[in-house]
Image 1 (cartoon, rainbow, N blue to C red):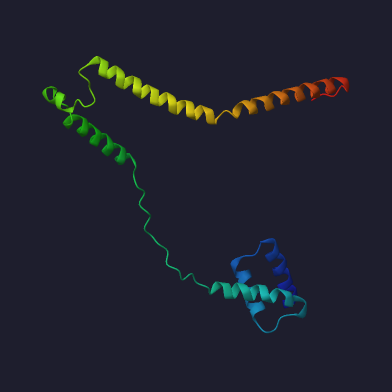
Image 2: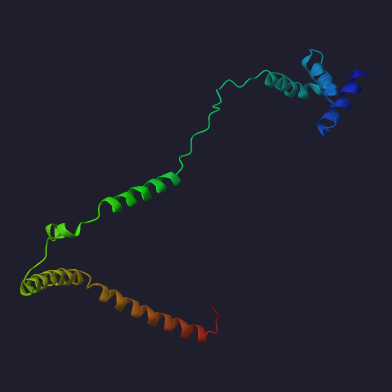
Length: 163
């Protein structure tokens, strides 16, 4: 009679229809020493549940959250620093001549210096463009690839294949 009751409770347990009292009856039965031989396969499962119930989590859980740095205040501080820099660094008109470096009093002197600077820039530019002369060869190679594309188009027309 008890065995039939346990089997019915097991069937209800597998279907998820047992109450807490019925589950406790099953746990008590399977943790006892007298278990029917045909129900021995359920004994390790209920022994695991009993052992699992006694486990405890022992690690510390940090309750403080990490502070998130607010980047909005950095932009506000940067704007303030820039505005103060512009406000306090205004050049005074009378002292402008002290800071006027690189100016020429004679126009011919300025023209000579400008032409020397442009000649130097031109020589460096020509040197740089001479090193990329191999790009013309690349252009020739891509033009031959265009011929291959035309050949492929004609063969697709001849064999009537659609792309």
